[in-house]
Image (tube, rainbow, N blue to C red; front, side):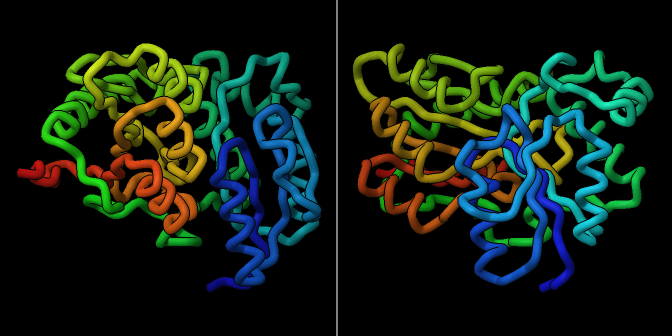
Length: 280
């Protein structure tokens, strides 16, 4: 495990918090930059940090260099901001003009940021390069098994999520009894789950399928699953979650699986060609 200072550029969701907890545990030094309007307000929890708008490229670069960071991990959800929200400094504006910011979707913005970072001599790494066992394994992950109908809904959701992701719209869909209840867009996964819960039909079921976008740079913004998502699914009365194995983050694995077992929902690490046989 490297002892060099790691730069952490943090967006929203549980993944940044989990990474920081691991870095604290293994005592790896890091410098934390929380992205304004993206990272959770309570993320720092007393840790040294700085809050910067996504467009403060020069300040972020200087903070990383002062801390001696050579590797930077971009972790957490980052939605595409408007130029007004971005608040670009002159350095960032010049770089954005070079990459054509106005033509980029969410993934394109992240790739563009990575290009800017790397052009300044840093190396952008993925969380899986630092903490390998955070990736979701394949197969049934808890005590609850998916039904035959659930597995059919998973496959329909996979098809829809692949199409959704290829258009750089979102990573997740909810399917119940073959009907797509909702797709993820700018509102995020939590809002999708809430909306799907209000639209679900009688008869049970309801599956959240969350996959990496086909064109996605896997160093950042991988699909993530944690206890909060499970709690939301239970509250919405849905049946289970399928998330892509090897290309998604399973945040706090033991707690997430325990929450699913307690709530009576299934967790499935989906891998192409490796769907489990339905229970007989």
